[in-house]
Image 1 (cartoon, rainbow, N blue to C red):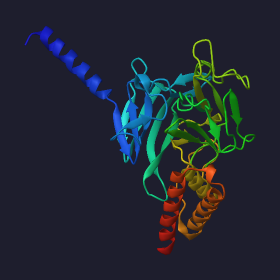
Image 2 (cartoon, helix red, strand yellow; image 1 turned 180 degrees about the horizontal axis):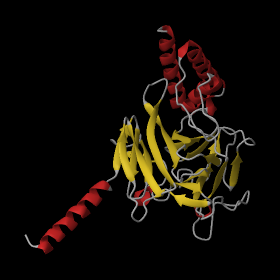
Image 3 (tube, rainbow, N blue to C red; image 1 turned 120 degrees about the vertical axis):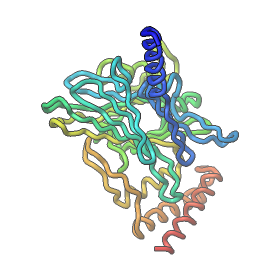
Image 4 (cartoon, rainbow, N blue to C red; image 1 turned 90 degrees about the horizontal axis):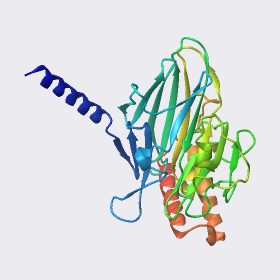
Length: 348
């Protein structure tokens, strides 16, 4: 074989290796589908649709390998987008029940972003996605570091009510939520058939320092925080009715060879799932400190089960007294959940 042919064959093998390394990874869990794209460092989350056979619908924008939603790190006063960079490919490693990205933007820090699923305490079926981002300081000196995440939401855009929370029925203009000021515990983007929720003040997630609901273009900035004008529309010079969410977690000093860990939990929204989350919080599920690593546990034991049952009974009574406050489907699901919890309690 001539040298030219050897070089050509080696080049082809290297090209094929790079293509295979960049193949997306798909993980199914319960009615959820997670797709991870090492081409961009992005990910997409889908929920099984009630319409069609084995048909999944995206819970946020998934175009161009989900490249319009991403996380960024603040290190040494500079902003680093967690994405593929020249000469620094994104690692993608399978884990037990999930997977993780490995980013190395500079020699000063490395990031592991692990994706795993959380099971519903009643059905024991995965129904939430846990995203834990661990930033390791490899600079050899203490650094102040922080994390933020931009999501290109879409479900609420067609309905005119872009977002709502457990305390606000409608968010249709630019809004900012501040930790310690706003008591909202969950933020929801809902379309006609699906709804996506982001857990804020729950034991499963780290509460961000700030959350901005705004036009996506205005959140896609080179600065760490965007320009904010309360009540401004979700329109911009470049896009109409295009909303997004920006989560910014508190900055913290990180010693050499230590990690800053932040957890965000997202997933399909249903009133009964939110009810269970509230009951888990009331049962005292452990949580981490500000910007620290959290331990995810489901409520367990007789006391926790009794709290869940009481929450379910209260909601069922509320619906029965005011039938217009919920659908027949929600009432059926709540009754089913109550039956399961009562059976679990009898077995304890």
